[in-house]
Amino acid sequence: MRTLLEDLTAALGAGAVKGDPLELALYARDASVMEGSAGCVCFPTDAAQVQAVVGVARAHGRSVVPRGSGTGLAGGAVPIGKPGAEPVVVVTTRMNRILSVDAAARTAWVEPGVLNLDLSRAVAHLGLHFAPDPSSQQACSVGGNVANNSGGPHCLAYGVTTAHVLAVEVVLSDGSVARLGGTDPDPTGYDLRGAFVGSEGTMGLATAVLVRLTPLPPAVRTLLADFPSAESAAETVSAVIAAGVVPAALEMMDQRITVAVEDFVHAGFPTDAAAVLLAEIDGLPGGVDAAVATVVELARRHGARQVRVAADEAERALLWKGRKSAFGAVARIAPDYYLHDAVVPRTRLSEVLQRVYEIADANHVGVMNVFHAGDGNLHPLFLFDRRVPGALERVHEAAGEVLRICLDAGGVLSGEHGIGLEKRDYMPLLFSEDDLAAQDALRRAFDPERLFNPDKVLPSGSRCGDIRSLPEGVWV
Image 1 (cartoon, rainbow, N blue to C red):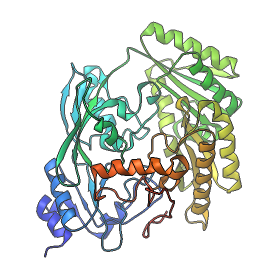
Image 2: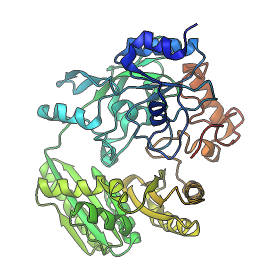
Image 3: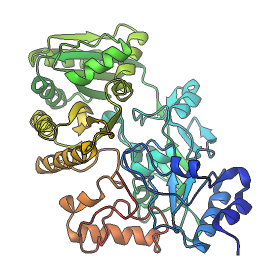
Image 4: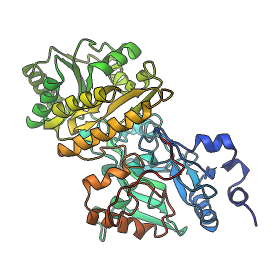
């Protein structure tokens, strides 16, 4: 009887299957601080090859872990399995073709390995772009966006990934191919596309995605306002939304991350400000001008020391380079960081932010804050050195406390990173036993045998809502 590696090689070819220890170690983790173990790693190039991988994995009693670019931060692509039965990791980076573009309908069929920014660049000459723009958009893939229902700075006005996905072609656990959704504006039956987007690879593996393309706005203005306190910046956020202005993006950075970014990018960020807001308004020129005036007036009314409006596209790009380079800038300060993700009501931002500082101090962990303030999506960034005994444990303790205070404030566990392994065992804090059982039933309807991405999202025994520790073989 042939081995798992031999059967996969026979199905895909020698260059598409990796099983040496170095490759397995590389694909045993994603961008989180968690690590599992992979049985082998496959690089299919089309749906037929994905079907072949699923068939081989089933025959050998192995689970399948879908993986895009590996930029996920919640451990969603970390392979979990018992020794001798490690999962098959299916990497979609070679499925990177833009299959078709319909400029009139403003849609495109793309394979899951297409990068966000590459898609936007490919259709820019048509006056279109793919609106979801995670900070990792230069590296993250459309398939990963679909898995996590990813967000990004400009999703305040444009919505998260599910608003930009019309249909998904999926390989299911029995090896069949299903198309979920379509272009019908009033489809009949259940919204299975909506159920699949955000399922984090637990219901099947996407092999093609029909995305909605958004026209490039005719006018764009970007503003940077700096404040003497985080409270005044947070109050400005609420005031802007209350005034009926919905910016394309409304981002906030505290002083600690602003200093790091300015030292790294030299974009002219005021390092003596307690907090800065980066706001972007787009649309028709007249409406943009009026909205900019409103935002400027509200920022000043709430204590902004100065409001800077980017003079041209070069200055605007530099401001955004600073915001999207925030996590890279941290590498100059600490060898490791843990980027968290939770959501609170906008009106509770300043209160929760203060508690985040207190929690970090109590656990002797450094913290910086950069986040999507417009929708209350917090991203505390904990700095540490995993070589220091107990450092990672303190980070996890702080992260757990942050989740609890966000839930107590009326928030939710994740705004865009997903649940994965990171927040799986906190799900019972947000959902009842019946809620978890319903989610488990939906998952089983797609994947009765739990072939895809086991031990993710739902805690063990989700039919009774219990909490358990991470599976054996997983370290964080």
